[in-house]
Image (cartoon, rainbow, N blue to C red; front, side, top):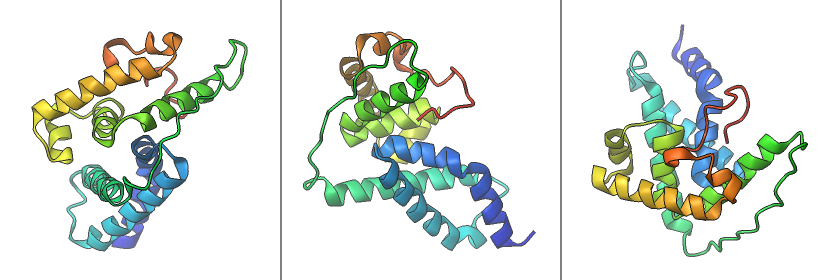
Length: 182
């Protein structure tokens, strides 16, 4: 298989997962698409030199985090956060899962970038504290602090019925793996 075909196969196989990570990092679907596109361009440029027998996911994840960090640094002074949460859905609402996901995304978007990044990498990507620290470029203690503060903030930001479903700070991604966790 040639390199271009390998790259296309990788993107088809893992692209939606990384898009989900990007949505959680950015808090916005369109910004996430831009972030994934920019990261994939960077990955494609080095694909021929990359050992694809290893874990290209880890390399792309690092590109996503670093690119998002550089975008945030460039724009942080111009952004004004808006925290208008949608009404909570009724129990018979068919789109309840999507509404819950939207509320969680809004709560994540309200967090400072370092806390959001720590939560996404630790609980959505299910990385260890050491892996998260390496990706974030900080110590394990900083990851623990950011994650702890992020979990506390999420509990304050989420409605009571949702924050109770987050035992130990894990956003409950184990419920129906077939639908969008983000």
